[in-house]
Image 1 (cartoon, rainbow, N blue to C red):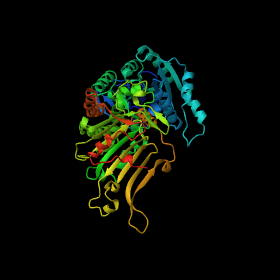
Image 2: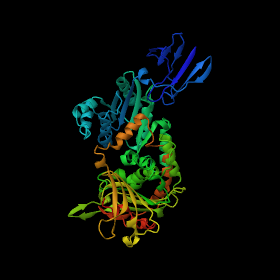
Image 3: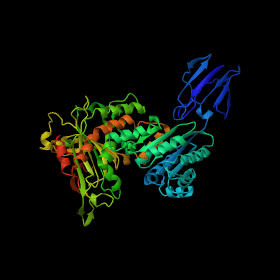
Image 4: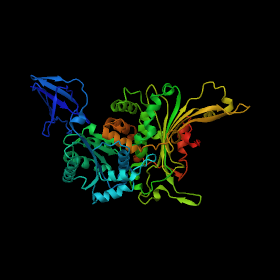
Length: 570
């Protein structure tokens, strides 16, 4: 007898068979038996990995000798129906209500979710299914270009939403959730996604309970973990170690929602799909790179959370550093998630460790403008009196490799600034022996070409070039070649959470953070954070609504750089 052992891919079941085969399906422990007319038996056994998910690959045995099976066509839809169960842990929180449930509905509305799916909310609050549906229904919206049947779609989506109340550390409660999930999965091949929209101090409790009591019996089980991933190298490593007591790395999807933003997603396309940029993408032509994040509001009642982490941990060590790694990486072998993440890790490992001299920190103070008073950071009742936590930071980073040696990467992030925005600014070197330098006077920075990628708001890509002003005199002007997304692509841009949730469901990992990537990121910032806290460095005060502390300008001036966002009116 010849036995074919089948190892299932995450989303399909594959096997080659000829037209002479008769197929019979069974609900027993064998997934399927294929019998030829010569009464040869092909038997399938659902072999599983350590996380209960079927493996990928196949082999067959004939007379005790195991042989590989060649690549074969996919007939998964003929062998089993898949279902996806999405459990939002922390369903009563703001993130779940404002971002996760609306993103799931948007995916459903656009037809991206599987035919068979169920959404469960899990939290300690005592709610019924109907109460959950009412709560999230107030945050659901339809795409602006596709409003037809909006209310019908909402109703259909809400009918697939359910709620289970339980303690985050209770395996019994997760076992009860497992029973409800099985009831909705109705014997189909079950895939399960858990979104941990909860504080990091209970990540491990939830993972322990869910992995032991509510993992899929025959499909994949994945966990999306929200930042922060620790406060420094040590706490991050400990969190990873604890998570890996119950999960393997392939099950952990560490989410940084900035990586799901359209302009960040487009960064590698802009560089690798356009010949005009790739030859310029090095120290030979680029003078400096600026990564800027600014908010025009303060902590607004979130001071308790923010004070524990500060602007460096909250924005710079994750959002901006991830964008930097994508920007600076070498060309990956392919678009496969592991190949891209491999290149990002190489960049992070090539970066110098930050020192105190490389950084300026600030904290906003109270300010009155136009008859309106704005509070200081320490006026927030949730912030400890006398707090030294920075609400602003600027840093100079360097990548010690052949492509970027000597090029300053300047980061700036802050709250309560003069405007809201996030952008990447690439300032190119001056033209050698520029014939028109006298037309710019002594300010040669005006003659610098600059590529700006505006991540938010009003997404855009524009290139500053020097141009002659029409007329009889020789007058030069700096003009923009502008790709404004709202004009070129009138369709609404999907929210970052939509892309990341869809990627997690499909097993696409390139926009999620791997554990070694996380270690390399923390290694850059942890010594600085430790020094700031041990020396109790006092942040420079800046008025609410201003351009930030003066020290940030001096930091840039050390490298003969001017912050591009301060004079840009675009």
